[in-house]
Length: 262
Image (cartoon, rainbow, N blue to C red; front, side, top):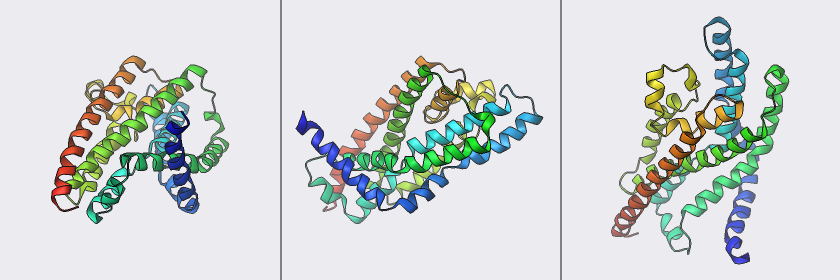
């Protein structure tokens, strides 16, 4: 049992120490995810002058939850993996007795712990400036929220890591991530709760992986009505789909990478 956890703990410790060297940059990374806080002001004004099912305080809490979900699920693996393939650094990873994905995963998890102090500071500032939005989620919502965020991070990581596999065939795999992000921006609930979407559009969107990356966990935290069974099953289903695609592309990509003399 000790040996089972030794490698993961070593990787997490090393990458956490590495992340602490860039604490000033971490502040900028945290602030770069503050778009939901900006959008919150827009939707609060719209709620006060429009006809929405959600009140102004509901929008405030929702976009606070979106901010928190984004901080916990941010992923950048495609940029690192593309650089490793293009520069030939992946060869060194392949010589090690562990799958390269564990390096990237440990890097992301360690970064979460390193950024959380700054996130907590922003959370405190948010409720100081907007105290009427303060609320205490019930225990069930907190448990389901935690589970949904873990699954959302796993899905987001797996989606981007799958797109990263295309770096074996093109030097601009990150361009695909930019296209994916545009769809995610509008369909994940990042710029607006799905509750304000037309019913027909919302029903179609729910068959895509986008809502389960942000809208689903955020709605759970603030207590908006969600179908927990469908949400968790859909997330697991998309995880399996992208896991299968990832492994197929990984094997095919390694053959091409080896054939190129790496």
